[in-house]
Length: 62
Image 1: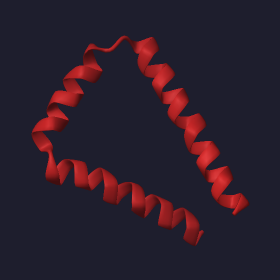
Image 2 (image 1 turned 90 degrees about the vertical axis):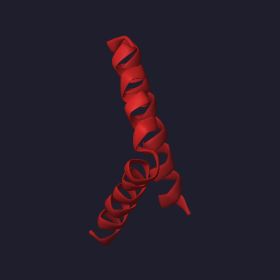
Image 3 (image 1 turned 45 degrees about the vertical axis):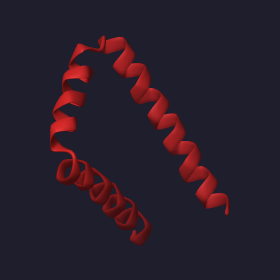
């Protein structure tokens, strides 16, 4: 359970950094994402999931 909380905390820290340090760039990024086709966004999401799973698996193997 502590590992899950640690992971969630790190995600929130990095997400918060984007909002705190570059809010105007975030607006530009949202516009770019809105202009991207749904299938491309889905492919990016699936790739992010696959990379995340590999990272978690690799961290568990250490």
